[in-house]
Length: 181
Image (cartoon, rainbow, N blue to C red):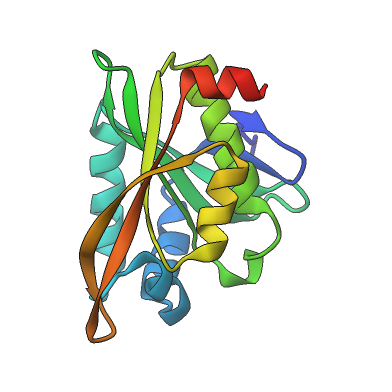
């Protein structure tokens, strides 16, 4: 089978999703460690994951990629721009490494940088934003390395482990991206 590498970095590449990627997402969304990081609380069936992926790819306001390891072509996660607003030239960034065996290898940071490049240089966005749990120090640091800045706090945004958790709103603007480049 040919591999459609939409864009590549040093360790990973991003490609369009395949139907077979649903198994990775299903595995991840039901794995206790992954669910913890994504604040997921209910089990998902494979059919639900297929439906979710079909909805994302049918939506013109979403661009969804599978993150694959360059070393062995293994799919390890997904990343996306959702709610792409062509008038405001803004989008919301999403990323999940669904296989914990691939955590702490720099894949998430590289995927984030590839998506920021794609967002500004190809989609002509002006703003890319995200939400991240304030307690997720590794995630916040990775986003800051990619150029994102904290803009505000969503106080008590999620209920998690018998308490409310704050989330940061973080964003990178086109002018900041080009200044950093």
